[in-house]
Length: 410
Picture 1 (cartoon, helix red, strand yellow):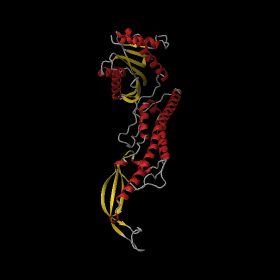
Picture 2 (cartoon, helix red, strand yellow; picture 1 turned 90 degrees about the vertical axis):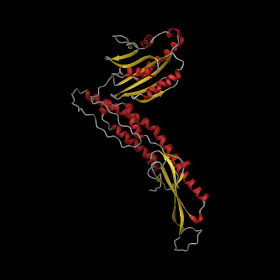
Picture 3 (cartoon, helix red, strand yellow; picture 1 turned 60 degrees about the vertical axis):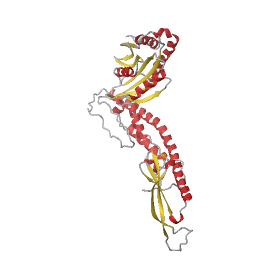
Picture 4 (tube, one colour; picture 1 turned 45 degrees about the horizontal axis):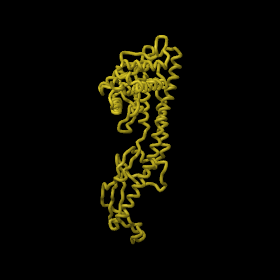
């Protein structure tokens, strides 16, 4: 069906309505669900619903899809001798010009913030092309004039799509921050409400079934599903503060300077001995309680912070012995997890000369793991950070930072 595009509403009101609807959906989530769900998965789920795929019109790839004969009314053609009251119909040719496009089909209806008052040509919108129709009388065909008409209409549509893309990109840039802050605000309210109810000291009998939800209508090729959560009651757990996590990593980074200044001291050390040097540095910054030091050793390669016999921070120390050994270290690290929100580090010691290639291989392995949900950062010249969620424990977000230390060769 042919219609005039870019006439039903404007981008500002349309996009704002989408954002407000999403915020309302977030605020309507059950408190228990929000407290138990992975914030990263929730953020990506709502971001997927709110992000808009911009239109891309391939204006340089239009083609004639169909050519057919037609009848054309030339009654009002002043170049023809048509007497008043008469109607003149002549034989003509109709051309259907198809232009490929990509993106959200619904955007053809929305007016961009910058637009032309002269309007736009009628089009038919299909799944991956739009159609323009042109016709001319056979007895007065003008190739040059027709070509200019086609190019003019294609250009007007291309300009509108370009303006629309600016609006869409501006929306997509701001929506992540809005969703993140709305989720954080909802979680704080949920936590306050849960603590208030817990403070009453009245037992509550809860349903065994998980909270019901509706899968959203499919809007793109691969819509995300809202993350699932365990059915047991939410219980607040110890969390390592982000500031402290960054400080711990900074201390670990400083060990690279120690290694550089005393290469001979580290050339012959094994993982356990190197781990001891890290422990000394870390415990020099933190006071331990009466039972011992803040950072403790476990097994031969682990550095732990434990609260109530559970780990809130784990660092795994390993030599680089290839991709399989690195994957095994990840499995070992994931097997230690106890709390819902755990921060970890993988310290990899390298005695080869290919540190850049090893960092890329580490990143490849981390990002392809089934537990991977988000790459927080990846610095080819520094460390990388990831968020993992295990399928067997969807409520637990695991933050893993990978660090590579070059060691001298004996």
